[in-house]
Image 1: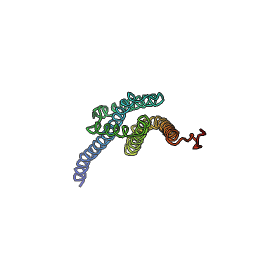
Image 2 (image 1 turned 30 degrees about the vertical axis):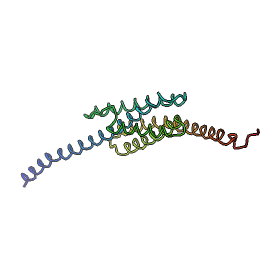
Image 3 (image 1 turned 180 degrees about the horizontal axis):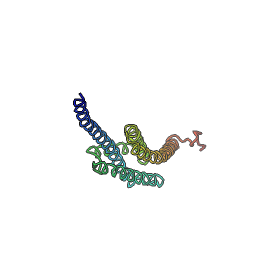
Image 4 (image 1 turned 120 degrees about the vertical axis):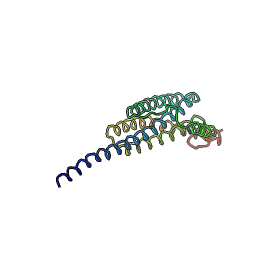
Length: 195
């Protein structure tokens, strides 16, 4: 009887590591996949901002975009290093849909009332998608160290996002005021102008 128990124990001890190794690889692959999607999103946004910096003249908007580019480049580089450390790799030129996303954004900016306000609005949308992706990644990552790193990058993105939101709101108000003044002969407060 003890011999049967020993045989069972040795089989259990042989099978148990197999059970532990397989989920570890699955978890590692899931983490790599999550990080890859974040890096691709950051790189795609960085490409948009690089184009935007060349096309805007508003000094505050240009400076904000340059700060966002730096933040995204730093975050994407850190996450790409994490992927390499886990045994994966990621291309740093976006995804197969990056060109389509950039063209779609350019079209929306082109048809907007004011191109610079259009860039600011588009930047706000991009940053909102990035924040959502980082929040989801933070919840889905079982590794506490990696989760903390993702949250750290999320805080940096939220910081630059607040600045672009404030700037976009200011630019929208300026655009509305300019349209009211030019279109109806009203002052910015809506009072008719005296001839």
